[in-house]
Length: 134
Image (cartoon, rainbow, N blue to C red):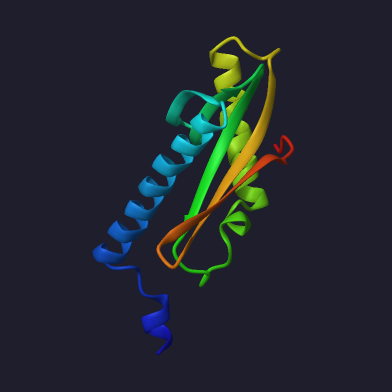
């Protein structure tokens, strides 16, 4: 029984997770645009990691982490943005600001938490979800 629980997910499970993530990010971008955010980058990658969405909200750069969940088996989407994840996002954000010459700009970290409930998304935007952590 324990071997089954520790087994790596099969390709179908992995594909389903990837699809949930991509659908969540698309929905998040649509909602953020509707709230007045101007999307600057999606899936920004550096050697340090990835940020799902970089956007402008007025005169602030928002580094946005999107978490989508179909079930609550592993906790809610907000819980997935752990202190370790926050540190990683912070490092990538600092690198982005440095590389783009925007170190003096105001910035914050937002989380878009999406929970699918009976096939309908329940979306929460959490501005200033966490402080710079490195």
